[in-house]
Every structure is written in structure tokens, then in C-alpha cells.
Length: 329
Image (cartoon, rainbow, N blue to C red; front, side, top):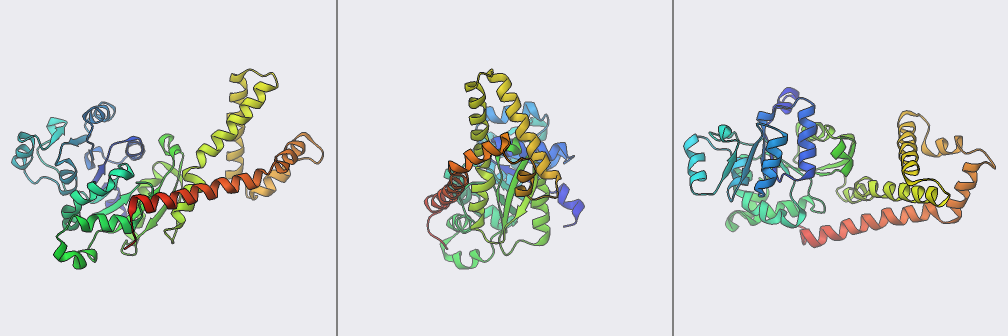
């Protein structure tokens, strides 16, 4: 597909939670056409919320919602039949006549429910062969393939395994909710350069940094650094705020100074050609106040604690992958 076609591809969001909404909102802010987006979400109240926030957005609920979002509905009578037997709820009603098949399917459901979702979707995914982008944490591409094969006739399992859609796995982080995310991406071998560009373009709508890894296990490391990383900085800021209060400052002022200091330091690091160590050395005058603080941190094992935390998050991500995804192919 051409670059122009990438931006116009029909998108089906399977799951309409916070991260799906963040990606959708970022895309719309970048000019992506609302008419090319559909969200399948089992919670009707959530559909109604998305409808109110993005008027005209197509949302689907019901037992056949996921399949319809991916497969499309060729005629108004096809859609009406599903609605009449309560297999599908469509909003807005004016958009219910027909749905185009999805070219890109974004799996944005909780990891615990990804398996039944993919088993249900397997026939239409195999038939339509869209690009699959998964943001479900902890589920590797091998497990995604196995889940799809489970939903296909057992007699064709070997053949089907070779004809599954390409998958790109994404580990975003929560700052994507304010369009300041960082995301790591991994693509299966059958994903083309066009697929990679399409996925990168979608994630760039909510992520200021989009980085590819060529080994899937490094997605666990991405989780340890940027996926879980915002909480590390929140903890650091929380501790700084508490220290200010302990020294007599009111909490509101301590919080405001801490947040702006964190933001300013990050912007300096982003814009400077210096590496992080050089930046630290430049603002640390020997025998000064910053030097005293840094020495106290170092004496307390600050670096070792940070490394232990990142390693623990990486290890937990690998454990969750085994628990949620089962054995390897």
C-alpha cells in the first residue's frame, strides 16, 4: 500500500478501553478520517461514552461485534439480520447500513481475554488477512498465532499456520494518553516494510518515541524501561515532594516545583547533544548542593536499585508471557 493509503486504511479496534481511545484520539487529531475507524467494545456504556466524545464514530457491541468489525457487512440486510437477532448493536444507527472490511486490526483487549477473542476471530482473520497490531501486554506473537490456529479446523492446522496474518506487537506506555508516549514495536517475519510503516505511523500519533526491536524478547526489556517507567518517575517525584514537605514546604508548592523540574530535565535531555552522564556532570558543581545530593543517592545504592527495578519488571513480563500465552510453538 502507498503512504497515502496507509493513512486511509480501515481500522478495527477490538476493545475500546483507555489505550484504544488514546490511539484513536491521537489519530483523529492528526487528521485520520473518523469514517475509517470502527470500535468493537462489549460494554455498551463505554460505546456510548466514545460516541459522545467522537460524534459519528462507528461502535459495535454484541456477540458478532468483533467479527463484523473485521469482516465488514456487505449489505444493509446483512447488518439488519444481525441486529434483529440481538447479535449486534450498532451506533450510530445512521452508520449501520454496511461496514467495509478492516485492513488493520488493533487488538486492544485485556491479555486475559485475548485468547477467546482470537479463537472467535480466527476464521475472518485468515480470510481477510489484515495486519494485526497487538497492544495486549505479555502475549507474544507465538501465542497469538496459536490462539488463531485454535479457532480454525484442526485438519488444516499445518497449512493455516503458514497463512496467518502478519502481527506487529506493541508495548506502549500510559503517557500515550496525553500524546507523550514511548512505544516499542516488534514485527513477525512476514510483516512487510509497508506494514511496519503503517504500524509506526499509527503509534506515532500518540508516542513521541517509537522504537523497533528485532528480537521479541526485548519487548520485555521495553516493558521494564518505558512500559513500567512512568511509575518509576512518579515514585521519584513523590519522594521529592515528600522531602520538600518534611523540610517545611507546603505540598502544593513542592509538587509544582517537582513536576516542572522533571519536565524541564527531560526537555533538556531531549534537546541536548550531550549524553545523560555529561548532562548530570555539567549541573553538578564539585562540593555544591547537587553534588551532596548525588553522593547521598549513590551511597544509598540508587543505581543498583533502579537496575533491580528494571530487571524485576523485565522478569515479570516474561513470567506473564508464559502464564498468559502458554507453551511456545
